[in-house]
Structure formats: structure tokens, C-alpha cells
Image 1 (cartoon, helix red, strand yellow):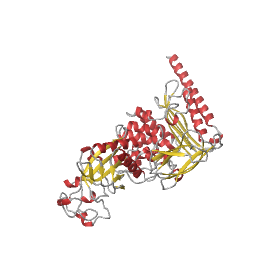
Image 2 (tube, one colour):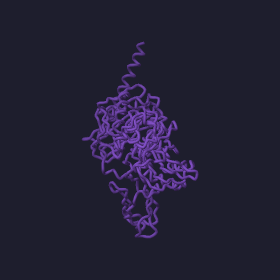
Image 3 (cartoon, one colour):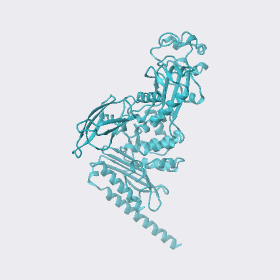
Image 4 (tube, one colour):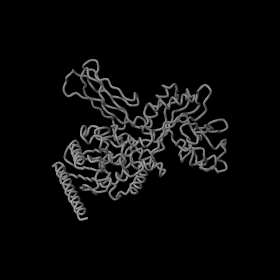
Length: 549
């Protein structure tokens, strides 16, 4: 018995010495001049024992940048579920003749699907054509009313508005609400470079101020920016003769919902469907997602209004809450139709915008579902958020939390749902301040301790694997693909990066040399160095943890 006690005592002494040595090594690593007057919060915790192996400014509330996406993706898995999918839908309103003429409108409805790309729009267009539609006599309406109309987050920098990483938010999205710009040299020196956009579209105007120069010319390069509040990209610079095509950058678009409709009209035309009367916004919401699932149609009141569900016919919803939704152009008497009259669609008190009935007998054109695009499931969406650090997809997911849980598709409602989840996960809510989901705002604040608590919670949750696998992997993929490649850490570290001007963060999981699993968070603010220096120091700390533990 004494020998056992002596052995245990020796183990405790060695463990204490080892912990003190690790503490001293990390302290020495962080003792750099450029961090002296800034802030660096660090927490390292053993996921099996719960032991905190290192802490420094653990409770300090710091700007986390894109580490905010950890909070949103964790909440999405728990509150929306791993099988949740975003949707984009196409409705037909009116009568389809036997020869393929739609005497009415098409409606493109966005339900938060920020994964929709051009090929998805092409599939939707083909489904419309397969449904028998060849010509649309009316309009292509676009409906983005499922979420609110706030395009930018609180505290976002206006300097970043032209660029794809700060694309405008909308319920109806396409191509991440941005275009990709490429340039290649012309055939002769002095001529402008040849520019192209992906997707190929005339929605954005290109102002070409570039010039092709001789091979080997110094200081060549092409740059671009978008004119504020306009879909105009100004491209400048030089490109050497005979060079390869270069990727210039991603640039956001104004009015992304109309952009999606514009691309959809291109896809319709390619599929053999002609829209005669152009693209206009829908001024009232399209049928609800639940009605789509039940295959229920709806009715509309005017060519410019995409209708609401026909539940009022069964006496469930007052007419004032369906067709007209307090539209100023509708006469007050229409809002006073008694319940007994709600089912009488031949009533002369239901006018079109022109004052006459829409059809003979006053019946409203019926809404018919035609096509649907579904996003990947949420278990895959979180990887699309975290690995490339997708700001738009994160913000739409945050608003969707508000829409699905609280019935309000706003950032404010999403933040309320997010805070409730974080409290249930055991975070100290006094050290959490949230104004957006992506981390673009410098007004966000979260302590390193709270990030580690969230990582611990998710490690124990039913969604542990989906969450961990959504994170960039050191030396393998995402924003960590080029960090610590070729070292033992490659493939053993899963972490979310974050970066703003004088802000750098890294939080995630590490499997050490001995097989221990750690949760860690490193958040640096207000340092006087390049971001690359901050990232290099984080990598040194992670490598030290792998070696010592």
C-alpha cells in the first residue's frame, strides 16, 4: 500500500512539473513584441478529463471574426437538424394551354437557399419546360419575402461592399450573390485585356480600363472594384502578352434577388421557355412551404402580386392577411369582407389592379407548383460554411433559425434563437455579444473560454462528427489547407480560422501525439503585426501542444 501511494505521489509530481513546463513554454512563445500591447486569449482543455491545461485571458471578451461561424453552425445542427434543406421553388399562376402557352406568370420563390448555382437554375428551367410550358405571356416574378430585406449586417464595413465575401443577403440567392471575373491578354500589345464573367451574364456591366503589355513588363497585374450601389465593375491594370488567363476576384451584385431571376430567365430561354413581359418583383409572399408539401395551390389578386395561400377560403385566414396584406393600393372596403363571403370568389368586390375581374366570373388564377431545388442537408451545409468560411451562407442560416423557430426571418430573431441555444450549451452569456453570424462585424464579442465550452458541448452531442468534420483540417482542406502541411499536425487538427484587420482567431480540436483529444481557442486582437505573423504564432502553439501532449 505505501508503494502504491508513493507511485501515485510521483505521478502527481511529474504531472505537475509537466504542466508547469507546458505553461512556461506557451508563455515564452506568446512573449513577442508585436503582441505586447494587444490581447491574446488562449484556453486549452482535455476533452476526456475536462482538465484545463492552459489559460490566458480566458474570460476576456474579444472580437472573434469568423470564429462566430462555430456558434451558428452548432446551433443549426441542433435547432434545424442535420437533415434540414433550404429550397428554391417555381410556381405557375394562370392557365396553361395545350400548346404550351402560360396565360399568366411564373414565380421564382426563394426560401433561403444560398447554395443555388447556375446549374441548379438550369435544372429548374428544364423542369418548367418538362411541365409543358413553352411561352409565358405574363411576367417572371421573383419573391424573396421569406426573409427580411436587410442586405448588410450591423457594423459591416462599407469598404467591403464590392467584394464577394460581403455579398448582399436575400432569401432568393444564386451563385452566392456574386460574379467571378477573369482576364487574359489580348492578341496585340496595347489592346485591352479580354474579360469574362462566371456565370456568363449581362446583369453586370464591365468597364474595361486594362491594357496588354510586352512580356516581362514590370509591375503587371489586374484589379477591379464595383461601383457602389451599381452593377458596374471597373477593371484596371496591365497583363503581359502571351500569359494565361487569371482569376481577378469575386464581386458582389446589387439586388441579388433580381440577379437570381435574371439568371433564371437565361436558363429558361436556353431550355426553350420564352418569358414575354420581363422580370418584376412579387409584392406579396408566395405560398408557404407547408402548402407546397401538401400540394395545395393558391390564388392571386393582380399580375404584379404573387398570391398567398388559399386558406381563407376555408375560413382560416382573414382576407386582409392574405391577398392584400395591407397594401395601400387596395380600397379599404375589401379589408372588411365578412367571413361568410370569403369563399365567394365571384364577388365583384375582388377586383384586379385595373379595376376589373381577372377572369370571367371573377375567379382568381390558380397557383400551381412546377419545380423545386433543394440544397444539401444541414450536415453538409455546415461544412460549406466552415471550411471556406462562407459569410453569406452563415448569415442566411442565422436568419433561417429565426424564421423556422420564431417565425421571423431576421438577424435579430436568429440571434435570439442562437443565444438560447448557447445558454443551453453552458456558455457564460455575459461574455457573448452577437450582432451577426459570419463575424464580419467588429461589434461581436466572445471569450476564448466560451468557444472551448461550445467545443466541449459539441464533442458530446449527437452531431459531434458532423460538426468536427465541417471544420478545416490542418494541411488538408479549407482555410487550413496550406498550414502545417507536411508536419505531424497535418490531418490531426480541426479548427475554424478567423481574420479581420488586427484580428486573428483559431478555435477547434487537436488529436495529439499520444492520442489525447484537446479543445482549444486562440483569439488575438489589436496586435501590431501582419496577419501572417499571427497565424504563424498560432501554428507554433498548436504544434507545441501536439508534441508535448
